[in-house]
Length: 226
Image (cartoon, rainbow, N blue to C red; front, top):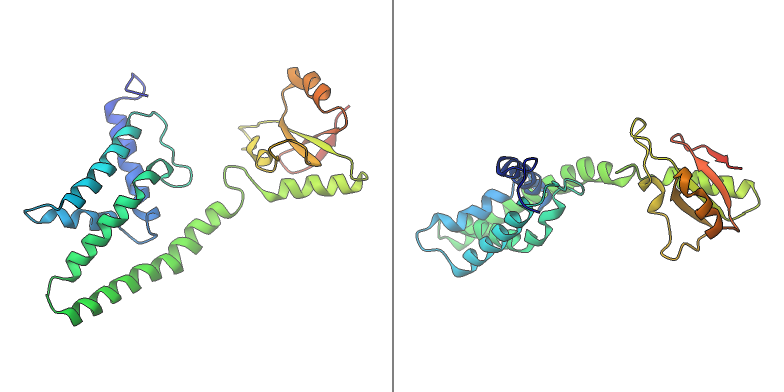
């Protein structure tokens, strides 16, 4: 962590702004949410609750600004610790905006209309159109298709336990993560996945003597290894 020739303050600022932009949508699934967090600070006297929430967010953003990796996977995953104070600030901001007229009935109608519209956007667009397709399958090269192919190959060969070797291929966007997620913690399942490292094959064969060794290709084809 910290700044260097590669991770300059300017790059850290750009990364932080980009991550905040993603957090703006991921936070609640609304078209925008972070601007509501600023509303409580538009008055002259700030609430201690609002200041504490802003400090929490600032510490989270500032801490990860020192880290060179942006962490765009799973949207703004590094900013998840800041989610509770951001939601609280956004809620307080919405309440302040809706309470502008001072009429309780108008306040209720205005708040109901805003929340209905914002939540409808999240339910009808953000989650089904953006989030579900992106993370539902094939995210970070993880797909149930590869595991299904391995299970089918296993069934065709009498159910023998398999060690499926995956060779990373940047050109074909095929990586160890395509199978690693299906490994059990004890590596006792009937199908276990490992990265194909030729100089480590002897060690693998010694550790998994009872298994058939097969190699899986980027198109899902399994090939037995001698």
